[in-house]
Amino acid sequence: MLLSLLYVLISGIALPVGGIQMQYLWRNQLGDVYSLGLGSAACLGAAAATMSGLCSLTIGSFICTLICTIICFFVTLRVSTQNLITFGILFGTFIGSLGTIVVTNAPNGELLKQYYLWGAANFNLEGVTTGDICFSLALFIAGISVALLASRQLTRHFKGETELSRLHKALLLLAIMCLVTSSVSICGPIGFVSLGVPNLSRTICKSSDIRKHYLISSAMGVGLLLTTYLVVTYVNFGIYLPISATMAIIALPLMLILFLR
Image (tube, rainbow, N blue to C red; front, side, top):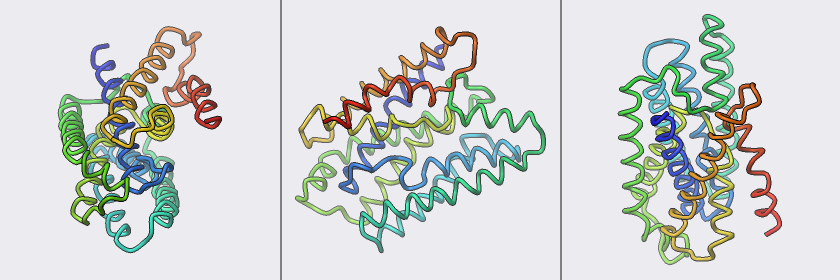
């Protein structure tokens, strides 16, 4: 129970913070931790780890997401922001297809079920080891630390007052990768919270200071995920409710507010 609540907290902070960083980094409201294929890479790594048994979920997700981040970084040096988002969608689709191939060739039905339940997103922490938890916590701390240290410069970059160097972009992408992996590798891919919540934060608060959006997005992300967790745990009507699907239903009013604004 306590570990589940810990990952509700981690996911509610890591994904919105990573999402708002992507929006500020590319000066695009469509920026999202999944928009460059990072989420798909984490899923591919988790699938490969589950089906092969060569490493844990977290290690598999980290390796694939790191490779994806390196590829995306070199692409950013050659294409415009708009083209980068297009590339990210296509690249994410490609990686997702590889994941589908890996999963459909599962050695047995039990492994397929294990991956499916993980992919539907939950906070049950099934098959998660102590090593996985320690590694994901280390990734979360590293990602949040870089996010806070780079906040002033990232705000200035978003406002057009300065341009980030290639090194800064690389470090920020690595930090976002750490945040994504810290959550996705343990709980599975969780949608909306990394795209909708940062945009909702920017709708509510007009300040361009990213630190304010870190706080607002994190509070909203944790609140939304905690509500979803309580619903799937105690108001599930006797059926299994995946976190992502349930949260999408709960978040519908927030989405309507976002579109109306």
